[in-house]
Length: 616
Image 1 (spheres, rainbow, N blue to C red):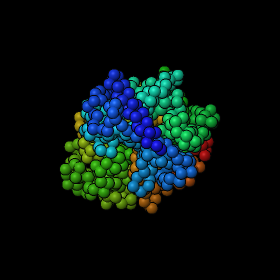
Image 2: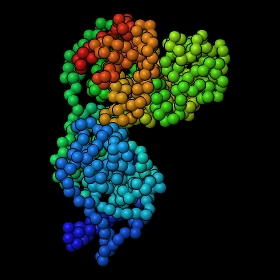
Image 3: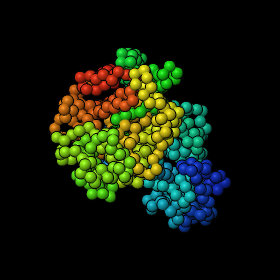
């Protein structure tokens, strides 16, 4: 390239930057774009010393886009599925998303806000250098990109002086960034598409942006089963989105083979057939109401409902919320695994350390998860903090045997109450908050241990014991946050309240080894820990995991992890096939409660068998 041509490119880039800064100075960024408050930072405050030309324009070098598909496809990339290799290699080749030190792209890991802005900065072609950034929490690696993005209105902060560069970029946040970036480049950002999503309300600041990215096809394949506006975008998904954004500007991006939608749902294809089978099983067992969620290949793909939410008054829907009964123990197990990831708890430490008491036996989180704690299990034992603390320190609070030994296995509701309290005391947080922050909000799930504090408490159903009322909705809604984390353990054995659809999302996370809709929300090692089990079978031939059980040869599947639950006329089943990633959640009320040859409630077993056969 000649000196005249090189200088021309530099002057052009300078003019582009100058126009960008003028645009930013004359138009305030949209308030609240990535959080409750988004500050307007005058562009002049972030400009640092830069080389300037005779006319005062900033001199930068526009990054060129040379290369070939052959060169691109020779880039060594690991950590992505085969169908995503092209996009990942392109993002690496263009310097938008770097590889880890070991060459791993970490495709399923959430992309951070800093990474997303740095990638857009790379696409801008601007090489602005700053010695100050309006957000003190931004490290050196993202400083130039964040200062640029803030100056031109592509992205603001999440609060006064705070950008949160290491927080995951959600689908809503990224949509806003992409649309503003396109507007900065002078592209048409008008959307001719109005998208309505059943559940998962889009934040007001991102409504137009989400419609625009959907209209442009930038989220192709990501929203087949729902938008999930607060779900993080994975690095793999970000690479694909950026490639689609650039396909008319970068010949290599335009030539890439990018994945489209996921595999077709067999459940949806056979929906009417399965709907009839579910209704027939419900009638056969006298159920008042039934909900079913279907998981295929680690994704929630379909849902069904039957009967009444309020008998002979309000029809059941997929949105109604039922008591999960002992499926609650899976939610407690997930909470324990998440807190272990965060370094808050040790599965094998004596829980006395969390209670400030010397236990009379070495009770651990692991022994409570596996029903081998030897703690006495009785409704007459106190659930409150002081009562449980006294139990832990008293010889009379235990049965015989050594904690942790499967020979002393005994299904223990009370121990799960103690476990939930222990986790809350260790974390200093309610388990509802732990689950909300890590899983429920990203999944657009409204469920929890305190039914009265749900976002839509009006959807909580009464519970029926055959045809009679087992427990009113009003009595369930009286359960609100207790006075402090760890104050009571009463809800943890069976008080989780959820729709089958939302419980299905938690099941999909386990079936997907910690990934949900292509994004890792939980370490695969944590799921493996929850699935770990001893070699000693329990009575009935099952194996105790943490806290599910493993059964071989059930409902046409080689292996199923599962948990059952019953209370006040509720009979429930959660199960998944760890090999295929398939699963089924069945919530029922008013059924007869009979059991099948797997010692599982027959109404749930019949429905699960029908679903597993249909999606095999």
